[in-house]
Image (tube, rainbow over all chains, first blue to last red; front, top):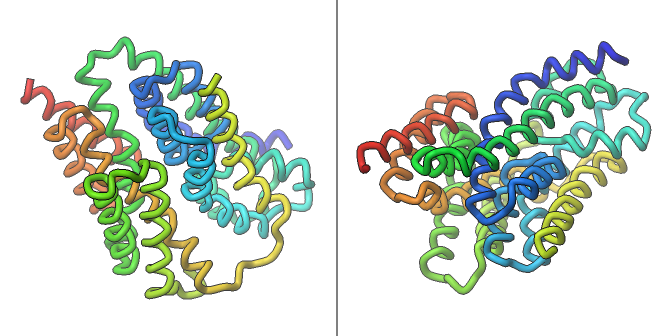
Length: 230
Length: 100
């Protein structure tokens, strides 16, 4: 039990270090959007996700509706459902329902990636260890960024505003380079998003993201259905 | 108080999205359309979130464009997420020094 936890935490170490710097950027962004450092830290502790939190803070700053918040989180985070389904096929029998309910909290892109690469069946302790490491990095980074956002010179904190977007580009570009269909879907989503920003300005930013992404992904799924093992 | 409501809703939705399939799902999704849609949706969401918002993320379009170019080039060559994220910020910061 203890050994599995330590192994998980050790495998989670690179994730924790990555999260530390990215969440530092989130902390700064959240404070710049008018949230308190405490709220920013609570958001990170409860959500453990980058894109959803960034969009959530945008909605809070813009005074959006709660329905908008629900739909945006659903759209952005629905990929976790797919990852959860995938991981659910590879769980050790020690994964009882309460353990599943607890460990599901920590399904992120990176934790999913590392857990998927593990040869043996996943135990609760292994996942808890990894989630624990990732959680420490993500939450402490947010708290530091939110607090230091007020201490750092404006030149540094404004430059940190781009950190999360840089990470998003790093997620999109390699697959778009390899696959013409991903390239087309991302270009379509970006084009629609630009259209909403400058032309159809009556639509709020949260809904603009949902509509752009759903149209682009649906068109992609119709025109270029993926093969079974992708 | 209003902020607390936003935070509670955000956290609850995010948790349920992960918890329900992880706890209760045992079957595989068969529909090729739905599987393809789920495959594309993360990329589409990130793309729509990033463009054009990235150009307004540093308070100066010029420094943001410099940061975006740095991120674009490094991710094109497959650098790790964290390296790309920090390089984007570093490039924007350096560009800001030249503007000041």
